[in-house]
Length: 193
Image (tube, rainbow, N blue to C red; front, side, top):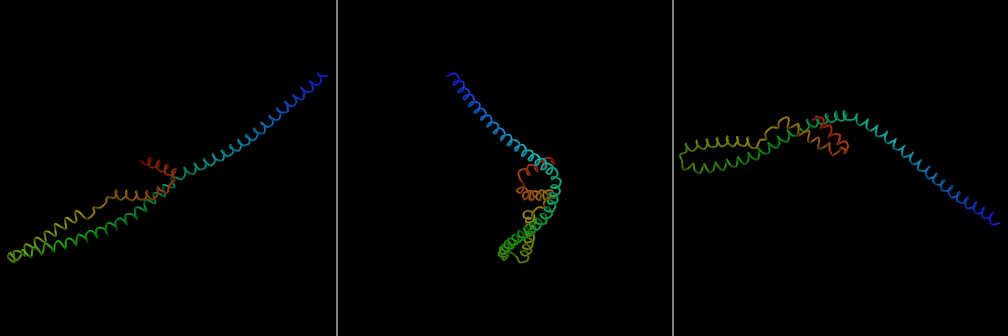
């Protein structure tokens, strides 16, 4: 009797083992199915991102001509505005400098005139007066020439004005660009040079 019972218990043990193996395989299949779904979702997302990248790249390749046209127009208008502003500033600065120098010249001339008048008493009236006029005239001419030489700004060349305008425009534009646009702009500049 022991033999049939042993056979039944062996069958039960084998059935339980097979059931456990079946359950493990079923769990592995469900896990594999979930990972497969996740992989497919990631592939779809990747495909959408690649399509977006392709579209963005196409738009970016079309953008430089438009950007360059706008940039050239902006540079031209800013150049004109800056030229007028620079001219006005230089004129105002020259007037201020000349006014201050004129006052100093007037004070110096008055001081020199007083010194000359003190010495005039010792000399004859006619000779002294002619000397004073001559010295004052020569001093005024020499001082005027020196003022003109040292204090009136030298005019800028058209090339210097162009660089000045372009530099100020770039200082306004560059902080507004993204890193990607800035890199593209640098590549464009290297292509121009």
